[in-house]
Amino acid sequence: RKEVEQDPGPFNVPEGATVAFNCTYSNSASQSFFWYRQDCRKEPKLLMSVYSSGNEDGRFTAQLNRASQYISLLIRDSKLSDSATYLCVVNRGSNTGKLIFGQGTTLQVKP
Amino acid sequence: DVKVTQSSRYLVKRTGEKVFLECVQDMDHENMFWYRQDPGLGLRLIYFSYDVKMKEKGDIPEGYSVSREKKERFSLILESASTNQTSMYLCASSYRGYSNQPQHFGDGTRLSIL
Image (cartoon, rainbow over the protein chains, first blue to last red):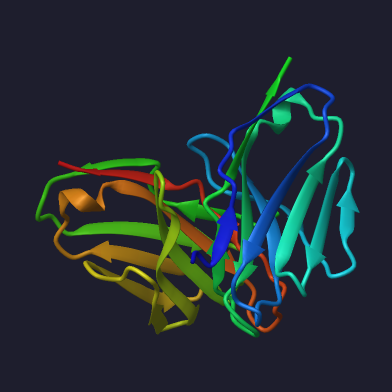
């Protein structure tokens, strides 16, 4: 089983749609969770951290379910510029700086 | 803004050459990382350093070594380059001491070994 699993997609959605990505992780000791965005042939960039109570940043909402070891990202009112690969990222255990990156979910937003 | 700078965006080298990839960060981060990214395999950790002169092997250290002589600089060395080391190499840095610290990446180096 992969340490971080994501549906690779692609998710093809029209502009304005709401889309949700899910991710599961295997290490119950993980304490840090993030979503990164990666554009084609570019470096990953931090989109948002994920907190236990859930958190929102504009059109983006992240949720964490520790009991199920599950993380989600919701994008509302999709824009063309949201087209990218979204990486689910967790740390490797308590008090370690090392992160495990999922292989990513590709989103294509169409006009 | 955090700035992580990698020395080259594109690099072409020959089989058997010794290759140096350099990375510099300006945020006084303790942790620095080298990854490679290949289609279908995602990001894989090569080496990690949590302090000057300290290093730790990642998941795929074979054929690589690293050097951290100064806090801001982390070098990746391909001892004798081979064609299977053709890849995108990404350097990242983060603070140490808190669990919820994201990593910040450089632009990446696309390395081709001929």
